[in-house]
Length: 443
Image 1 (cartoon, rainbow, N blue to C red):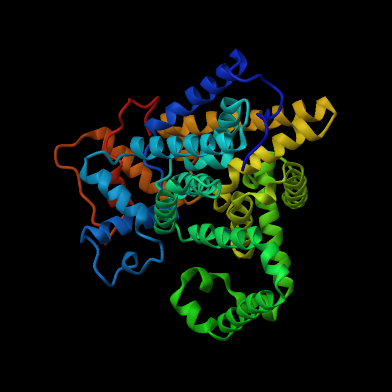
Image 2: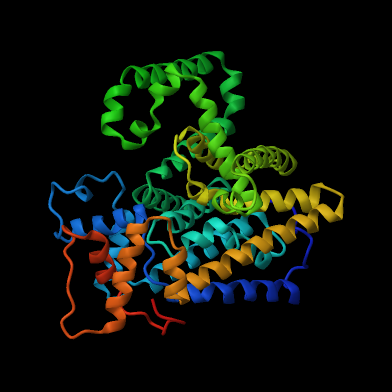
């Protein structure tokens, strides 16, 4: 991705103005309390930590972790931190934050964004990112690897051939951290086809060979789909057979992903919006906003001529993979958050004339971002607030209550937990440790 001149994200601040610097510093300061969070577990976080236990021999070959389809790149990274005695909620949160800062910085460089600090701050204010910074999951680190790979491949196609080895390495590491990294491979191959479209369409024989190859590969994929589903977890979970037998299910998948795009654009998750607006109305509102997001993406791609960049093809492949995914979770879009934020602010700031739309949208986005930061900081600093508001699983809350109580009592011979009998308390005991700062209040 390249631009002929620096591009202002939204026209709110000049490059390196005191306003930009102050805005960035405020966002970072509001993020810092999250370094002192308790270990925040969710389903995937537990799975990653259990894979570490399997890799260290604490879980056997018949355990769920031994057969988990998650790649081992991220658990091995956490295991390396553990062996260096650096693995803690603080290091997890810090790495996630730095990963997203670096990822957004790389994109800002490629897009030649003028006010990079504002763009980076807006990316950090995304409620999806705020929620994930404190979780032991791979999404933020994968986003850095994903955008670093795009950055390097862009350099390669600008004939800086020395970048090809780090580009290949970053792509392979991305795949080892998350299988969604395959979007890089497919996207780069499609970009190569696009670059050579003149040769391809200029020679009918070559075009026929290419078309026949595509048809043969697709036919082989369809004929071997049952076998592929057994071997590849991602393909199995796509449940492509349902789409073939029930075409209406395609619209259901599209709806949930338009809803996710709507959450990113409005910067408010459905779970929060539905407490203020009727749940059904919230659902339709976010879907409509997601459709608007797609329109904005199209307009920005055309305006910036991004189709001529490898990034366009990689991002498009990733987005198509997401639209095939049958499950709802906006965090799957994390690698696209920086480019989505850039697109919407570029559209409102540079392609629409009404000033009140530009500033009105910016104020709404920033307001919800600050609210999410304050909410997350409260979870990090107050055990009482954490127990009342973290997650919706009552059994998980009970586990945290026991864990916090054990931390505060400091009994000489506290009970210890086994991963076989109580995996949550075992993981909290092993990976949370004592709080690094005193909490605001007790449990």
